[in-house]
Image (tube, rainbow, N blue to C red; front, top):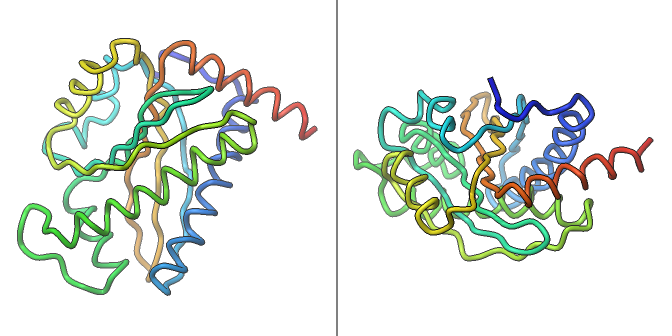
Length: 207
């Protein structure tokens, strides 16, 4: 169970905001690939960092492909698009019609996934920044293929204030196929508090 229990208002507002971001990301990917791309937000929850790999157990067993983008501003932290390698290869094939080479993740796959992660992470976090009036600046995205434990340990080693992760299920649907991954937004206690306060204020303004 999530350590931080989101209220119904917080969860509904986060899903609405993320769907706006996912809609923008899907439109950008459709333009880029000339294919109809749909993105869904089936679920969102908040977990403490020490419980994160347990929640993402299926991803934590083996190496994963993760696109990482740090962000700073009124809310600061790290955003990750996490896909298990088979899903990453499948997504690359669907987006480009080019079969992935039988390597861990070939250079073409890494390039496509980095751009996909960049579009998705910018669209989602950009929605938070624009709609919640929380200006955010992004670093250049990077991609890694390694264990989720190692990815998270590296992030915590750089910034010990990172305490919570907002975990979003991300379902890419295109060409009658679906690829599911996870969007993980890692935040400090002050950043998470600021984000949830802004989400509640935005939801009240919509009423």
